[in-house]
Length: 160
Figure (tube, rainbow, N blue to C red):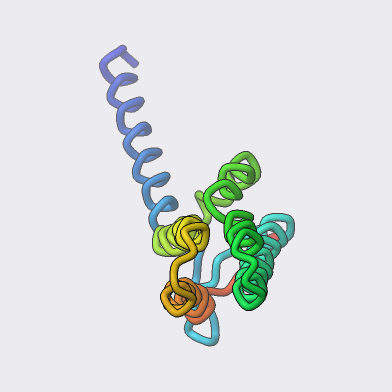
């Protein structure tokens, strides 16, 4: 084989690699589940990490509501901050492999949700009207509803 042939093969392999990575970045490791949601296939540890993060989101929503009900604006803001983009940054090293498995729409929904917690924390600290804050939380929890209605996390099969 001459160097031109090797070069062409290398470029072709590079394109295949880029296309494959692009496919997985966009679609993730998914299938259609029996209940017609998108099943995201993760390892048991990855699944546990995602579910733990989701429980933290719900705990923060509860902390925000409790804080606002008690007129503890700083407590409510801290509850929102706990799961904002700072949480995403702290989990970045753990989530790098997961990100390739998640479909792009799930990623957009997730990052948008974390950003919304930060936005609400800032509005709470400004002591905006409780009705306005509840409206913001309504928008926030719609992300949760949309996610759970569209996706489920399944343990990926050992067969590959």
